[in-house]
Amino acid sequence: MARLVVTAVRLEGRTKSEVARDYGVSRQWIHELVRRFDAEGEAGLVPRSRRPRASPRQTPEALQDEIVQMRKELSDQGLDAGAHTIAYHLSKRHGSCPSVATIWRILSRRGFVTPQPQKRPRSSFVRFEAAMPNERWQADITHWRLADAREIEILNVIDDHSRLLVACRALRVFKAADVVGSFHGAAAAHGYPAQLLTDNGAVFSGASRGGRVALETEAVRLGIVIRHSSPYHPQTCGKVERLHQTLKRWLAARSKARTLSELQADLDRFVAYYNGQRPHRAIGRRTPAEAFAARPKAVPGGLQIPEHYRVRQDRIDRAGAVTLRHDSHLHKIKVGRAHAGTRVLMLVAGLDIQIVSEDGKLIRELTLDPSRIYQGLGGR
Image (cartoon, rainbow, N blue to C red; front, side, top):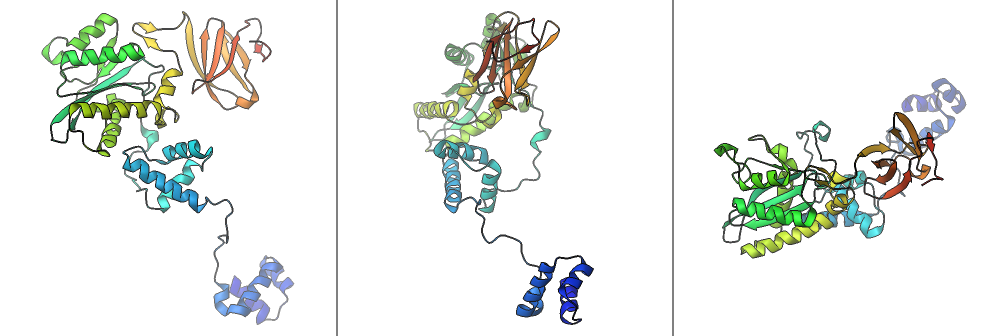
């Protein structure tokens, strides 16, 4: 097209207005083509990049360097160094940060991201999660070696809902009584769970020997439901299995402990960081401690909540309201347009209602008036 236009003007002697009309292009564009042809010849007609000479919204080079440096530091410490985690720390440091997608692109350009097209997409995973803290704990034992190559066992117990690491203890070898003692220690700090999920290890299950181990007997006594994963199917206890990986990566980034007590000190530091500082992607980038504190706790034999208590998940609509069915009537509860689009939990005990965000922040508290369909902001 460019050669045709220039030929019509320069060789055929036609006016730019005529050529613009006949070829359906602007007169200004013809002007530019002729100017480039006169200055550069045929090379002036080669299509040129439309990339702007400058991009005012481009992430500053200094911030890009900071992102890369943070990636290196987190990786060297054996901590999660993904784009979401970097965004979290940047936001804590500066009050704002580039989007996760922008951070991912920066890391990709700098060679820190290796494409893995063979991995299953996250959308194909079938996930299950307890609705409340202490509704289910997962427990498992993994292994670690000291500096002198002695093998040590590490018992990890994690809350299924919040990912709170309720127990992390190292022993040369765990016996049934050790597991029970660790379980009671965790419960003393966080309360007893309604259910306990483990694999079929000898200290967790006596099914292979036609009886019960100490942990199973104690669970029955306390009214705790104890379940075991299918043999050779570790995905059932996937949360605690994933925790093992995180813990081992963290330990590998440090000097090998020489004694059992040194290893336990390392584990205690890990627990403090994991529960109270590390943002967890699976729970909305909150820490496990925040997620654990955000909802009522389950207890053996039921939930420690008022009779007729129910929990309902909802999203505040564009008008700033949520709906709740009570006594076969659908009630509309005003929350405010400022919260539109926010996912919330409605904690309902009879007529008393609390509306809280997923991170546990109370948005509204009221007593439902059954005679009114619309519950405005005027009442509690």
